[in-house]
Image 1 (cartoon, rainbow, N blue to C red):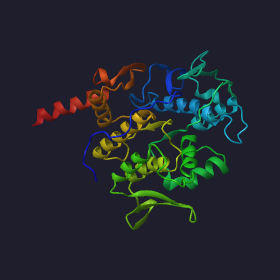
Image 2: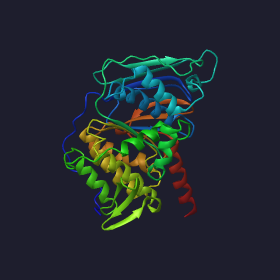
Image 3: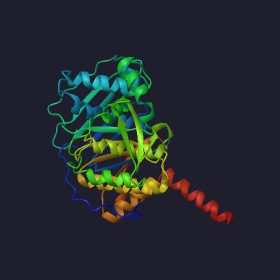
Image 4: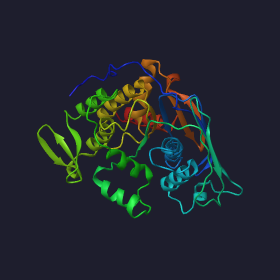
Length: 353
């Protein structure tokens, strides 16, 4: 297993012209107002529990997937139908109006701007049931994906049945979309991808092991050298890395994709977090855009080191006492409770020593 913590030697960054550049949400659940501009290839979202980090990423995901799913293949749904369904199955309210911030005369408004495209804008009030109006003039050909904290491989059949057969709430559409994306057939030429080297690096984190799918048995398994293990007996961290590896190998993710990761540190050892973010760094330089929500000091510190070492602009959206502000890791470590608590614990340790 490689021990180097240096960035991977990949080709220079090539940025797609349809990456998220700015956004603004007003009265979206716990988010009364949050906005950001001049977003980068890697973007960090930090804040206390219940501050709305996941809500923000899910709303961005719903907007971007509307640009990607509308008019794709045999899908004849309008942009309004795609967005309405995506919001409904992602947030799973009794009615869409329930995701509007509670309060008299509150109305949700949203604007997401992708580079070289008109903003995708929509809004609705608390009485809205299932229909949201939106218009788009151009779509994205690449795929976005949301990687939730929980792995999906051992639950894929249950997730698929609930979402597509029973049509009942349970696992939201970030999970069901991920299950479908993982089922994509592997291409005949598995090396014909700009991201193939990062796939190899992901597998090297576990000494060449990889997650694979047995289509005859309809089940996932972990293959390490010549041994084959049940997915249920596979470590959570291995499954988490295996999901990203699979999405790269099967071609669902490309150099123009947008990846939303909620709590990447979940089930990963700090050393694995460092290696994962070296790979995220490499993917970003290939053109992939990331939005990452985290509670982890290791994640914030690693991104800070990346920003300083490579003079990389990594925008940070921080929630403090319900108010959101934007800063950048290339300007220094942000003042936030993740860092402050680490300092308090260090001072306590010094006091006991």
